Image 1 (cartoon, helix red, strand yellow):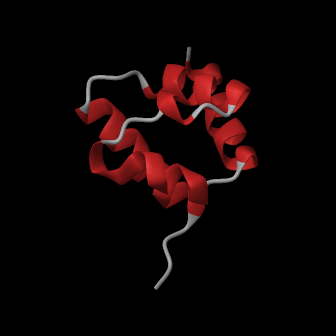
Image 2 (cartoon, helix red, strand yellow):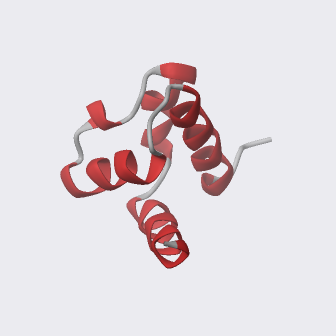
Length: 68
């Protein structure tokens, strides 16, 4: 069974938090630059991010912006 993009993104976010990073800041950097170094290697997150579309990341960033 394939994992959906949103579930994949949640796994990546958990890895970022575990590594001590702010997921919103890191994903914003990745989204705006495309630079993979914004994504931690922990939990294979850097490889997994390749399976998440820019639209899914933008949706996450937009929803997180409303929480601030």
